[in-house]
Image 1 (tube, protein in one colour):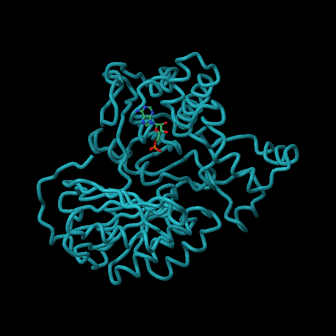
Image 2 (image 1 turned 90 degrees about the vertical axis):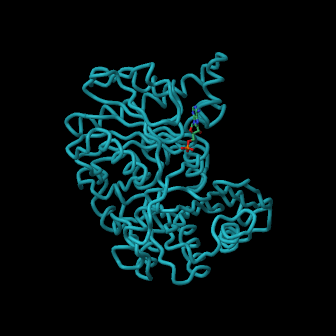
Length: 415
Ligand code: AMP
């Protein structure tokens, strides 16, 4: 049974086709620059040569049509007919207060996603375009929405409320929502498995990519997370400033004459590691510059690590302790030096990194000293697999697909 996982951005579509009999990826790819010049589809089948197709891709519907055509193409395709696709799973950025779990998409769900556009103005409209396009091109195939905010809906009110007048929450829904939920869910569940299928755990998951967030997870449920109403809050990120004094916003606007949109772009696109270092948003470039003696690059890395370390410490306090710290996403999985820099100073908590075990990239491994009271893990995230699993579970529970029809096959990994 095949599940197509779709992640639509404002000008892009990422996709993966899963064979759920063994959870292997048959093909994946990326449509880029939708509605712009030099648009293209980069299609990578698992066991064949990949290809890049340049075309005029005016909208998401044309992009998804190209993806479906590629999947069944005689040369580069991986299935003979689209009828093999039992369900489509969509990553949807913002589910507001409405969605704590993934759902089968119907007209009421679409209306609710539409209502959340105000909270996710860049992503939710693109997610809606993708869902509509799949509905048109694959009529009758069930579609499931998996929300980036969903996992964090278990946060209690004293955690998700800001210290603003209560009416800001009641009237406008202003509160902490949190993002990267599928990733925090995946790596926390995997850590719980690795720790002997325990549920009574206090975990701190660090999703450190270009966007970055930390979550405190108690007994399998999210208790707190660093992103807020939008993904701008919390850690210093690739190009986002993270937590700042809110008075800086009107101060900057008065000083520079920036409009609300301009100050939003300043904080989202020009700040963070990029803005601090003046080098790049990519840790690899900044580390190179720091090694050459660039002091701004070095301080940018230290600001980044300090914020993560401080967040880990505060979440340990919030949960009354911590059993494991998990690193994931581009930087968390791959940067040996940044993991080491972040953990330096956490020994008082009982978290002690083993330098030899830590010398790995992109691989699942415990990296703490044997016997240390707090374990530290590197666990590569897999948000797409969570979306595919949720899609099958929901469609099967509602009688939309028969997952027992699948015969398990040997599993092969497609990196
Ligand atoms: P993501 O958004 O999860 O794809 O993460 C992208 C970020 O991960 C990049 O901007 C880098 O800062 C970081 N990253 C990826 N690979 C490495 C690596 N080998 N060493 C250090 N940082 C890395």
